[in-house]
Length: 156
Image (cartoon, rainbow, N blue to C red):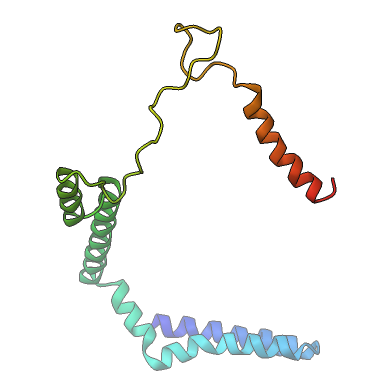
């Protein structure tokens, strides 16, 4: 009963504001305000307000919402574990079987074509850390020639 009274008061106030707005010659805004103010009374007359009041004040409904939230949380946890752990059990089993046969796993990268050790530069000796020597001048010149060709193509 209290909810119906509150909704009726809100609608009456909204219609009053709409009347004042229409008096100020803002008919479009007044019509929009009147439409919004009729919504609470419409909800009362259709029974939605009673249904919402029953939902809010019943502990069994809140228990149901809690169980739905728990189910959603469990779904999200399993998705996170699947993404982190490499997929579903079937995908892991297929990857394990493929690795036993000597094939490359579906998510693996292609093998490297180099031997894995960079060539030693002249004068550095074997004590130098791999990959820290200076690059020969030819390689850096090739890189810049590509950039120069692009700049010439665009007239710069």
